[in-house]
Each structure stands twice: as structure tokens, then as C-alpha cells.
Amino acid sequence: MAKSKSSNAWLQEHFDDEYVKKSQQDGYRSRAVYKLEEIQQKEKLIKPNMNIIDLGAAPGGWSQYAVKLVGKKGRVIASDILDIDPLPFVEFIKGDFTEQSVLDEILNVLKKEDAKNNQLDIVISDMAPNISGVESIDLPRSIYLCELALEMAREVLKPGGSLVVKLFQGQGSDEYLRDVRSSFRQVKVRKPKASRARSKEVYVVARNFHA
Image (cartoon, rainbow, N blue to C red; front, top):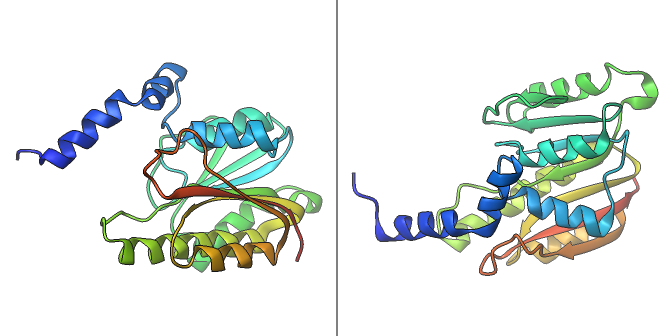
């Protein structure tokens, strides 16, 4: 079946993209890793020995980057409804984390260690819905995923923990930011250079979680 002009244009842009080329050279699974890398360079959120969960982790680029930062004494748990190829030192849980059985599995993984180690330092989420191109459909879906990530953060974060979540700006995004601020003492919005200029995506960086 012949590809449309729009899909051909997207493919051409993708393969010409400097971050796609860089990710291939650096051995990362996706260009998205450079968004997290820039946030990390500016915010210094991820530190050795931390416990992290990566929501919507496929194909695994963020987990791949995070596990290097936390080291062997840290933990990275990756979760997605899609399979990802195994990553060294990353624990993968397949399924929809909004389902109780999957959430229970995540919580049980955390409780394998001693009682002091059963909460997380950071929740990271690069989740996005399947894009239809219709903003009135895509935006509410995106906000919903952000709300799920925030609910997860409230469930599993240690006091003082952090959240990094992809948010598409538009109707509902200001309300979402107010909700995040109700649980975190410091909230910033960042637009990494690796985010395409035309994209409405930004990243919410929230620190100092309080119940």
C-alpha cells in the first residue's frame, strides 16, 4: 500500500532529525531520551541509589538513561501496556497500571526490599495517547494520562519526592498544573530542545511532594 504524502513527510523529517541520529549513535532506544537528559542537566533530579518508576516506558529510552544515573544500588521499574526488550537492571511490569492487579504488582515489587525502601523517589512519565490529529479528542486523552501519573505519584512517592510528566498545553492544562501544585511545593514547566518546536508538549517538573 502506498504511503500518503503526510506519512512520507513525517518519515523524512524523522530520519533527518538530529536527535534521531544522535540516539542511534549513542545507543539509545528513542530520541525522547534527550528530553529527559536536558531536564536532568538543569534540575539534577535523578541521583545515585534512587528508586524510580517510568510510566509508559516503551521503547525504554527513559529507563535506559535513568538506570545509568541511579547505579546498581538504585532501582528503575518500567511499566507499559506494550512489551519492551529487556534492559539490564530495569524491572519491567507489563500492563495498564490503572488496573488494580497491575498496580498491586508494582507495589509488591517495591515491597520486596526492606520496609524503608518501599516508596519511590521519582515518578517519570512520557506517556502520550495515540494521536488522532483532532485536538478536541487528543487533548483530553493527554490530560487524562497526566492525571493518572499524578495519582500514581500520590500513591507511591516518598515525602519530598519528584514527578516529571509530559503535558500537552491547551484546554485543561492550567487546571492540571493547579492540581500538581496542590501536592508539590515546587512546580516548573520546561520545553526541552529535543521537543519539536511545533509540538504543544511541555514537561511538568514537580519537586518536594507532600501528602
